[in-house]
Length: 104
Image (cartoon, rainbow, N blue to C red):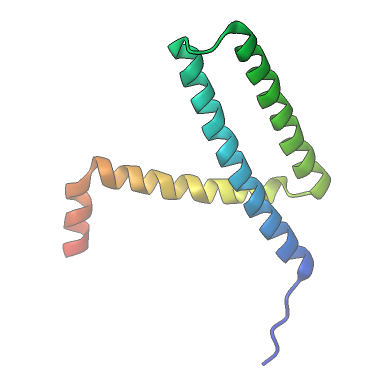
């Protein structure tokens, strides 16, 4: 049996996964930046620089997705990750529900 691999689909899938992970990291950086701003630990100059850096990162990410034609692949990966996170949170919030589901 010969395995046939469509290199274009593989490239888009892998690049989509990588960019989705970059977006997740970017989102974590933004969350941390907001926490620091709200805590008052940053000077106005630091807040301004941080805002410019995050905006620049957003532009680069969007440029890469557009240039490579992978916006849909990234969205699909992010949707899948969101589903996994939702399930994990649900298991934490409703442990008795999941325990009863396992017994059935």
